[in-house]
Length: 337
Length: 293
Image (cartoon, rainbow over all chains, first blue to last red; front, side):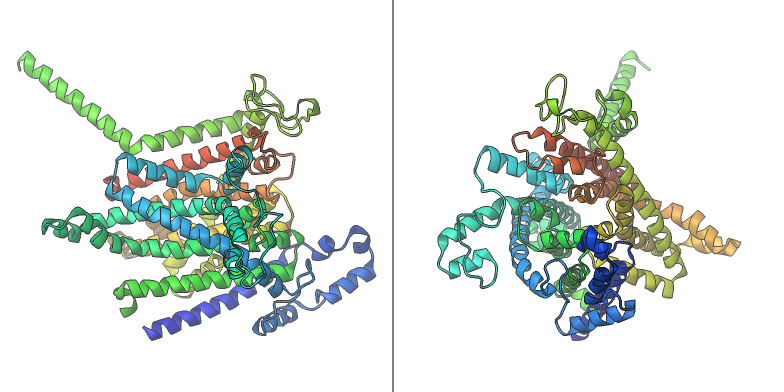
């Protein structure tokens, strides 16, 4: 087992390294010119200013030198300076990450808490109305465009009914609590400020539902299929034949075996939520990584793009690693190989 | 044979065919519904200039933000353009982009995956690492970075999407070819003296094409969703091209003029659900084991 963990860790580190190279090459080979998007028209026509700009940001060095500078920076915990915000990229990421972690964690829990029981129920009551409702929910969740769902939610629950607060992380009239973790739901109680806590919680409702929708659909669908697969196995028939109650067979025998594919999916889904908040954040004015990513991409802010991509790739690789390891823990056959 | 027996026989036959029809409907009803939806959208896209009541991008400031009515079935947008007309025209962009991305990405990925799996050795290893690498990046972030760098426009967005689209096909094709390459018919074809390219393209791939077709169908909806998302962010089509994602974006602030953003979204929803139904239907049809489920 230890050897398995070690070899997987090594591969993961190598993948992140390769990812930095890939994103560096892509960022530098595409024809977009950061000089033109950063400097105004007048400055871009002035050769001295262009040369100054290029020199300042190291754009005049050979490709491999720049990659080497970037890489050695990474090992010293330095992701460079964002051209857009003029601050270290790592500081930017540290500032925006908590809001994203907060939003996507809540969304993931929501998808899991609703999707898992829904999938199990659909499989248990197959071809009844329960099954049909569950399948319809998962279908709409998967097929509805995030940005459209967000619009509908805002129009109905904020615009028409006024049940939910509008975009943003907290109301404009509320003072944010002193930053400890950057996550409002943790910082506000730490400061003893429960009004802010409830305000932040209310602001989380709509965006987390929107963000959870497609993941919820996937989890419901996968759980249902995995449950049905498990239920068709011989050991279920044996369990039924020896007189176990239906409930005990379902939850005690079928469910544990159905969980494996759900764990895989769940891990990847969480990684996708952490990194897939671009649309949701830009609609709900959520001050997170998704919005930062979008802004950096539009500005061709290469240091920021590379920093984010590195972090994102690291999250993906790490989550994949955790999924594989949990697989090994859940299914003894995996690590014995 | 007495008259009664003939009547009974006819009655059981009738009952059998009713039951069979009902079973067919339960199994493929949704797929048929999906196919109808896709066909309607495809026809609408092709016939757009003839079936729409207004030109798609003529501005009419006097008639801006009109609610749905007999003249404007789905209302008008900020510039007074007919929303119904633009939704119909939007099908052209979305369907075309979906097909181009999935077919080109699918073809490239399938070829790469199949050849690598057939050659084995370093080629297979290199391919798997390359797909791992692309999988490290969430598609929308990578596509966004590439689209932003190449410049805004439908063609560049399609290129950006293709970069992230092929790996899943490469993986699927590889696993399918691995499943087939030790089959007896492959050994037989080798014994007869067929060359490797004949065996791969004429023998193995036709036998493994089913799951690829399923993935293509399910993926079409996915590609349309991703493209609409990029367009929504302003990285897809150049205005005033009618496109569903950018139409939702234009109407996103107009909570009281809900029709501007709502109808293009419903269009996306119906197309994506349609492709999902068809894809599920094809999978059930190909897989007798799943048919019973």
